Length: 311
Image (cartoon, rainbow, N blue to C red; front, side):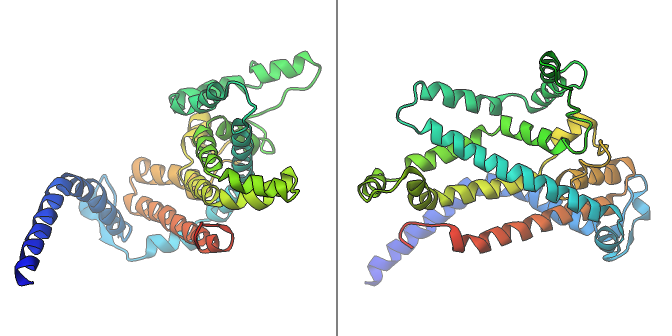
């Protein structure tokens, strides 16, 4: 027995050694470019640290955190802005992706591969260039959409300047680049066993009954995955408003999203325009902590509605 155990232990030891050797470049890169900057940013958040005069840095404890959470007057407004945008963009994006995936999954659809390619194609375009093109298309005076509305006798819409319309505009931009979500949902639909549909049809279930009792439960993990990605995407929602209005919050502060856009812009200005790296690092950490809380809430609720086969 002892003779058999020793070679096995030696084999495991060799495997572990080579595993660590091959993974060491990634570990070194992660430590240098991710772990150390993350730790440094938290340390910065505890200091009044100015990039111009780093020698004058002084420890202030959690004063930056108190300022960001309790004393910044724009935070409550930005929370409300983000919540409004999320109420529109998340449901619309998930429902639209689901509807398109259902159509693409239809066995009677002609040219399915072509349509899948067309829906996915926007995701491979340079993002900044695409946003600039959309800014021209949605221009109040010369945009194609408003020119069409004028040609049929309707008034032009201030797509990028009306606070009551701006969220729908950004939602439209999000739908245009939703190809990844569509393909993921389509993959989930194709993995639903056809036996379940056949059994439901034999029992006399209608299309909507099959949708409610078969399709949605079976692809609920995919829906949950897309929901988590959508929330993470909102946390990183930066380029669209930045390219459109340079981070000014125009129109009327309606694009100052807190966890994603507003804090990203405010963090950038605090850290690199005003050189207040301590407060900027605090805002960056707040983004991270809010994301952790939201992700935890989503995973906590998943047990109630996400179905996993075998559970």
